[in-house]
Length: 413
Figure 1 (cartoon, helix red, strand yellow):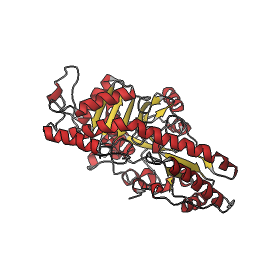
Figure 2 (cartoon, rainbow, N blue to C red):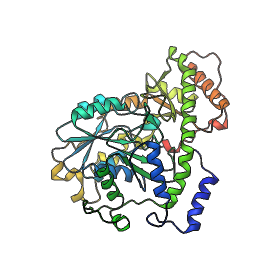
Figure 3 (cartoon, rainbow, N blue to C red):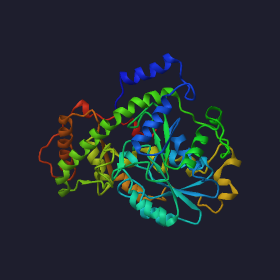
Figure 4 (cartoon, rainbow, N blue to C red):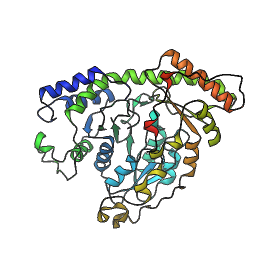
C-alpha cells in the first residue's frame, strides 16, 4: 500500500455507520467497485474475492482445469500461483523465466506436453510479460491463458491493461499491492460463462441473493466472498491508482535514462517488455555474476531477486514435497487421473532461472519520492556502479530517510 489516509477512513466509517456491511441487496460498495474497475480495465466482467489467491483459484476452476491437466507456471512467482492449480486438482509444471524476471515464451513452448492445457504468465514486481509472444505460443499450442496480475495492478502492455489480454486475469489487493484493502482480490474476463463459473467459486450460494439461473448448475466450493468494507476502501484506492502508477513509472524512466551511460562500465538495465506502460515499481539491473550483484547492494540499497524467498520455486514446500491437499485422497499428486502428468520436482530443475534471479538487483521506486529524491537515487546508483565495477572516482552514497527501503514484502519469512 503506497498511499492511504482520511478518505479511506471516512469511506469505511460510512459503511459501518450505515450498517450496510453485507454486499448483496444491502450494501453497494462492492458492486460499485466492480463496475468502476471494469470500466478502468475496459473489460466486461469483474468479480471481487477475498484475496488474490482466491481470485487465482476461482479463475483456474472457471477455465475448467482439473485432474488430468497440467498448467505451466513460472519459476519466479508467489507460491499462490501454483497453489491455485493444485486447488483445482490439476498439476503445476514449473518452467523457466528469462532475464525480464517473467516467464519465458520459449520455455512455455518447450514445456508443453500431452497433458498441458494452460499457462499462467505472472507480471512480477510491476513489470509485464511478453504477452504478444505468449499469446502466439498459446494459440499455436491451444492453451488457455490466465494472467496473474496480482503484482501488477494498474500496469499495461503496449496500451492494453494487464489482466485483459488472456482468457482471464486475477488481481490481488492485499497490503503490499499498488491498490490495497488489507486483503482482497478480483477476477476479470470478457467471457460471460467464465465469469459465471468464477462467481460460483467465490460464492457458491450466490443464487440466494441474485436468483437462480436455469441455464447454470451451481457447484460446491468453499467460498471467498468480499466485504463492503473492502469495496469501500477499494473505491477510494482506485481514485489514487492512476497517480501512483504515473509517479512510479516516471521515476523509473528518469532513473534508467540518467544511468544508461553506466552500461559502458557494466551496469546493464534488466530487459523490459513494455517500459512505457508497466507499473514502474522497480528499477532493475542485471549483473554478470551473483557476486557483483551482492557487492552492488552492499553499497546501494536494493534487493537481489533470488533472495525474495517465497517468490522462488525452491521455497514452495507443498509443491516440492507433493503435499497438494489436506487429505491424501484429495491430493492431486496421488490422483489416478494425474498419473500421466509431470509430478516430480527438484530444487535445481530451473537452475537457469535461479542464476538470473541471483544476478538481478531490484531498487523500488515510490510515488512519494520527490524530484530531489530521484536525483539522489540516480547519483547513488552511479556511485555504487563505479565502486562495484572498479571505476571509483570518489563518489559517495547520499543517505536520506525518504529513500529508506521497506524490505518486508521481499523477506523470505
